[in-house]
Amino acid sequence: MNPTRLIFASLVAMVMAVPALAAENAAPVSASQLASQLSALRQDGSSYVRLRMEIKGGKAETLQLQIKQRLTRGSSEVMYQVLFPKERKGESVLLKRSAKGGASGASFTPPNSMRQISDLKEPLFGSDLSYEDVIDNFYGWPQQAIVGTEEVEGVNCQVLESKPGKGDRSSYGSVKSWVDMRRMVPLRVEKYSESGKLVHRIDTTRVVSDAGHSIPANLSVRGPHENSTTLLDGSRIRHDVNFTDADLSAEGMKTIAIPHGAAE
Image (cartoon, rainbow, N blue to C red; front, side, top):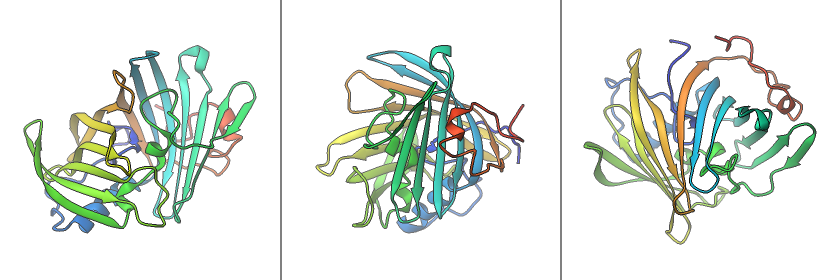
C-alpha cells in the first residue's frame, strides 16, 4: 500500500469512513452488510494524517492539523493537534471511545491549560464539526436500513439510514449516508436530531483514485449555524504507524511530534 495516499479526513475520521475498497469487490446486498463494510473501513488500525481545515462564516480561519489515530473494533483513540497558525500551534484535542460506546475527551491549550470535555457537541477548534462527529461510528449502530436510491452529483447512490440503539450514547436520532456502491464511498452524510431536524450535512467534494482505491479527498461540512461551512482537505496519510500509549495520552497532547515512520 502506498504510504502517502490522499484521503479525506478521517474524520472523518474521522467523520464518515476511510479509503474505500476497490470497485471490483462485491457490493453488499443488505443494509447490515453495507454498514458492516463501511464500519470495517473506518476501523483500519493506526494512521497519521495531515489536514487543512478552512472555516468559513463567523470567525473565518484556516488551520493546518495533524491527526494521530488508532481505530479498531475494540476502541477508538483520536488526537488532533494544530500546527498552524503560529498563535494556535500546540492546541490539542484527545478523544477516546470504548467498545461499549462510552466516549470521553480532553483539550489542551499551551502552555499548561488542560480541561476535560464535558459536552461532545462542542465544536472542534471552532469548526462545523463537533467532537462527537470525530469519534462516532454510526455504521456500528444496530439499526441499519436501506431507505432508497438517489443521485448525488450525477452518481446513483444507495441511501443507508443508521439509528442508534438503546445502549448507544448519541445526540443524533438518525444518520443518512448516500453511498456510491461502485466506489464504496459515502458522497453525502446527513445527521438528524431526535426530532428529525437536520443538524449536520457532510458532502464529499472530490474523490481521487490511488493504487486501485477510490478515496474521498475533500469534504464540505455544514453545521447548525447559518452561513457557516468548514472545508476539509486531506493531504497525506500513513497507515500502520506505531503509536505508544504515551503518544495518545494527556502528556502526549503537550508535544507536537511526528511519529516514527510518518515523516516524509
